[in-house]
Each structure stands twice: as C-alpha cells, then as structure tokens.
Image (cartoon, rainbow, N blue to C red):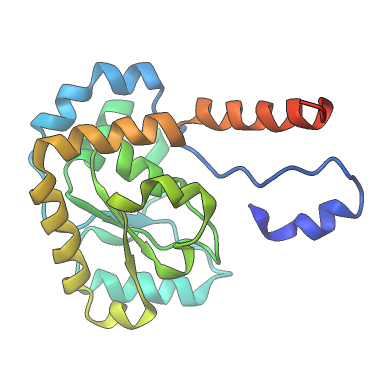
Length: 203
C-alpha cells in the first residue's frame, strides 16, 4: 500500500517503488492444472463481488449494500471464505463473466488480479485507473464512477459484452497475462529486482 511512503522515508533512505498486492490463493501450478476448468465453466452474467464489511468504512459498506439491491452476488461476504477448498473458491470465481470490485480507500485489491487469473473481467473504481500495476492490464479492465452505482447495469453489460466478444481466447489470455504480471512470484521478482538495483547502483 503506497499510502504511508512519506512516513517510511523519514526512517530510511532505502526506499523502492510500491509493489502491488498479488494473486496468493492459488499457486501457479494449481492454476495451470485447472485451466480447462476455466474454459468449461458456465459463466453467470451477474457480477461476483462479495466483500467483507468493515465498520470503520461506512461509506464503502453503504455502497456495497446499494449494489446488492441490483446484483445478488455483490455485497457483504461471510468471513468463512478461506475455510473453503481451493477448488470451491476457483469454481466460484470462474462462474461469472465480470467482477465488481469495491476497495478500501484507494487500495488496489487482490481481487482485481483474482478476477483476471480466473478468466473474468474486473470492474473497479475509475480512481484506480492510473496505478502502475494496472498499466499492462487495461485492455481487460472496466471502470465505474461514483455516479454509476445508482444505475450499475450499463457498466456490467459493457464488461460482459467484452467477455463475450473475446470468448474462449479471452478466457485464456486474461489468466496468462495475470500469471505473467500479477501472481505472487512475479511480485517477489519485482521486489528482488528493486533490492538488486539499490545494492548495485552502477548496474
């Protein structure tokens, strides 16, 4: 999270670029083994977007409650998600064309990358559009403005139209791109490269 870089800079000069969150709930091998499952899945045109409610963020909670009046799979989530099996979670993500994402503050949530790596199309706040971690992914991203929340069907229909237009090729391309750019091991490589660059400034 890049929010506190100024604070960190007061105690160390060894500062690198912020490194985004990444896919952590499925290993690269596991996703590769189940690629055919992503292709075979029947995709619901209603978006998925179950989020845990946090009492310290009432505006976000209200936004999720509003979206829940439009979409049955978007809204509050139970805290038992990670008690489920890997396959059960994978099947849930792969059962939807699009995914509505409501971050806490200006965060870039992992679920953006989870959506892509399971073949879906993320819908996220327009305020995140220019984040560096999304630069290579723009072809597959849709954005909503605060004003879209009262009438969210149009943006979902646009995301689903994109999903349908790309078809099987898109279901393969999105996970491949997310694997290359947004899986945990890619983030670790990014961190190591920054450390190497700091320790070897002449290179």
